[in-house]
Image (cartoon, rainbow, N blue to C red; front, side, top):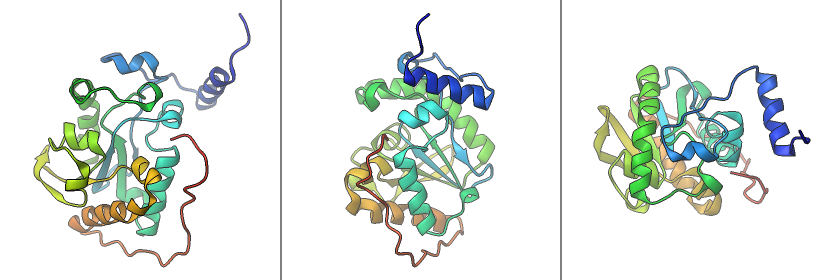
Length: 217
């Protein structure tokens, strides 16, 4: 056999180091292009759960949600709000990375979510969050049954999921393209934490996120 490509070698080294097998799911077509299924991260008893859309490049490699640049921005916003890592659980509604990070039509996405939903519900049963933030148009559509994030971001939706209140927000990846929306993401997160009795005290920090740094999200 020929030598492994740099990408394949990186994946092999990653999993030899972790000493684990790739987690695969073949319930929908997304698995055909994904390295593995991606699960959430954060506090096991967090009162707030953040649900994004689908894994990106780094998430696909590492098997953990929001570890790419969008995740770095999200960590930055949470840190500026003074929120600790155990106060939040971060996950996605879809478990496998779409080809080139491009999702199909809403109808197909809804079908894919029906396959991924048991994994999400398992995380919810384990963590037992008191409020859920839907980050981006996909979770807003498949979970909140709403469209147009701009019309709902920062608000508490009139529906619940598993009897849990829902707050809509922009996705961090969108904020990477529109840095002026960072304050909107921060306000939505603040709303969610305030609802569960965690009153964030924003840090008086001069640290700004490096939006110009090239990275894969």
